[in-house]
Image 1: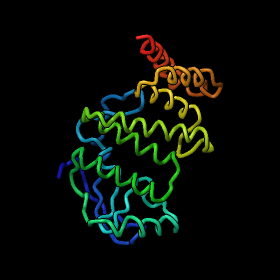
Image 2 (image 1 turned 120 degrees about the horizontal axis):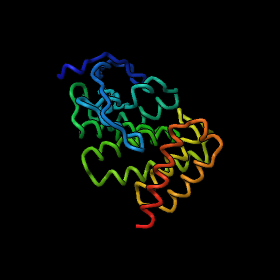
Image 3 (image 1 turned 90 degrees about the horizontal axis):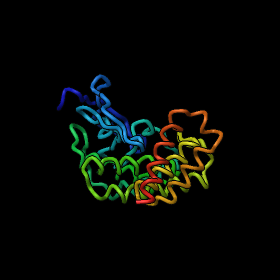
Length: 223
């Protein structure tokens, strides 16, 4: 295994069995650049590949920061809908990008079974899109569209902030994702709405980024 990685024993909150989860050493995480939709590029090992923890015994999968946040009804849903179909498999050790995508799709399936909020689904779908971007795979656009649909549902139906997502950032993401999937009219509309929002002034860096992307969307809309 790479020197940047280490294993840690984790107890599954669904089946209570222990398994090994692989993590990236903090000192090994080096950011190279970021895209306008917050996709991060790293020098060397990509920690995103190891963000999802998967119980090899029952198939429960979730982000490392949410893995233990599970109620009784969610445990029951996973035991009834995930575990009976699960072929025991360990994701410990070094992961390539395809294995990482598989873990995120398992996490998304778990969220679907649990009827989780769109704010949780959006986070996972966006990262799947990012990994397809790294692969230069056309499926990126498909998952960007899934993410966009989630963000629109969040804006319309969820109370914000939700899962660390505030209203201004939600508007920004709807605008930027519309731009990335080619809906330039919608992108311009949402960027304009976000920029004119009084709340946007409280986040100067995001407001500046929105103005840049707003101009880019306008330029693309006239091409």
